Length: 275
Ligand SMILES: CC(C)(COP(=O)(O)OP(=O)(O)OC[C@H]1O[C@@H](n2cnc3c(N)ncnc32)[C@H](O)[C@@H]1OP(=O)(O)O)[C@@H](O)C(=O)NCCC(=O)NCCS
Image 1 (cartoon, helix red, strand yellow):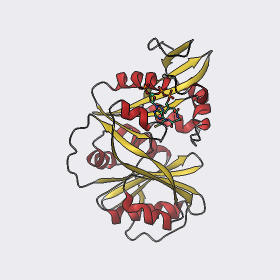
Image 2 (cartoon, helix red, strand yellow; image 1 turned 180 degrees about the horizontal axis):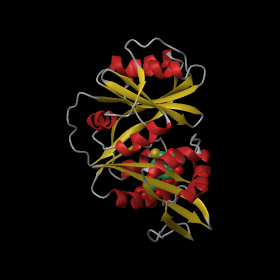
Image 3 (cartoon, protein in one colour; image 1 turned 45 degrees about the horizontal axis):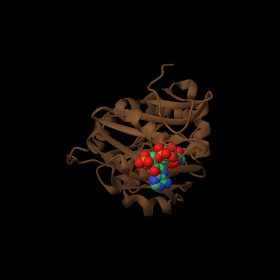
Image 4 (tube, helix red, strand yellow; image 1 turned 30 degrees about the horizontal axis):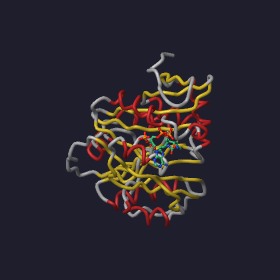
């Protein structure tokens, strides 16, 4: 473990260190305290495509922050400060550390209500709302054919839709989950948190995205399914499939290049952390 940088907060005896797999149990304590459902495997997936820092106080992890670099885009995520230590500058310090890792890349994140004031102070701007839907999935006949397939070509569709190169992440998820394909789109279904999550959903149009959501709900019928919608066009359909709107987050960006027009749209995120 290497010390990343000295830390000057109101809190004494704090050090920042590079985030390593051995820090996951301590990080999970913080995410559980924040009410997030992440299992150790979910932290490990995010860490596998990220670098970051932990803050240690008397050997205990009291803060986390990760930066996931996808080509020219960096996702900032898993920013958590131990509830006993909030409001003393640690969140800002953690952000500064991961912003250094991001360099000059376009920055994106999904903010909670807690996080948004900090990100606004750091110059992030709101670009949209993420709608978290979840519940016990109901089966449905997709309005277009949906099949299980391989991961060939999905990274290119994802890059066209979101502008970030997530080939390594998508391969990692596809190897552990299910790739659903329709003519003109795909979606990934994997274990996460309390059950399964569907995301990303990338498609040429809303009808294709709805079909992919129906296909996933049918496969997950009777069990817990979550989807983080980046496009409200799917919200009504998700609700009809038993996935109620339970909250969400605010999509924010900093230093964004003008979005190129694309035939593909991201209808649901891989996760709030990874966009
Ligand atoms: C968000 C979070 C990391 C902030 O950590 P923190 O250590 O309390 O943040 P800081 O003390 O460094 O505050 C940073 C700045 O944001 C401001 N700020 C923080 N929370 C605020 C709030 N609720 N309302 C208004 N301003 C707020 C502070 O005033 C401070 O401004 P300053 O640096 O100009 O003085 C912390 O609240 C947390 O862990 N929340 C639960 C998990 C979570 O939601 N994380 C965000 C994920 S997107």
